[in-house]
Figure 1 (cartoon, rainbow, N blue to C red):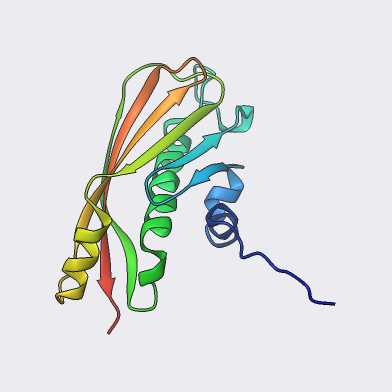
Figure 2: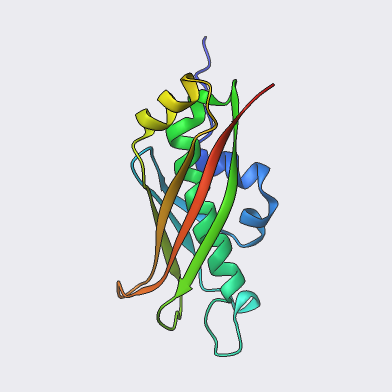
Length: 152
């Protein structure tokens, strides 16, 4: 009798290796090379002074969504390069209340990034993230610039 094992999902891997994602109880709803969607449940322990999710929790949510898409898009490159966040900029647009969701998209074609890595470079690329409330209103926007640092 053969046992079938399925590889862990990107969300499962991030929850196992990034303690902060697990601490915040992030839910990885989708993690693909084109888009990643991560949800922060409404949790009073992570509220701010007005009863919504704390800005730091929303930053971690958005950064985690960016990391999920990076792993999905470039996971096949991990044997020769390590992904690292270079910088991040976030703007809080509207009051966030209740659960919030971060949706991340690559800002540069993955093939271009890999081609730069193939040519011996250390590519940088942006990941754009929108944070939304349940009603669809965008409460924040974040851009994380990532790099693939070649292994030595």
